[in-house]
Image 1: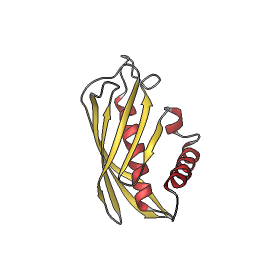
Image 2: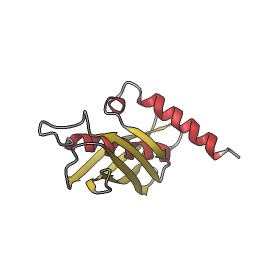
Image 3: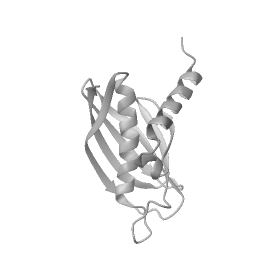
Length: 140
């Protein structure tokens, strides 16, 4: 039986390595928890704003897709990949500083599709964005 702590450390190393040099790294996204059922991550508002000083809606979508795709890839398992095929987002309120936190929760996990609900909140726990992502699961 595998030690859960060791499995978590290996997953963290793999995620870190796969995100080096990508948009995830550039936007400062950090994944703090990752299972097939639930993925949690943070992103700074600073550096991810639009001209009015507000968190860019596209940045919220990047965070949502990152978290949902990570969960879908874990769900898919070794030798398979997850690619986003549909995302939607509702922006409820602005964020102007600090970190936002996203929590992706699996709604459906099948053999060919996985769907996640992603809630993004500010540091006061107020909902900034709600998103839904569907990924196609493919063999490598």
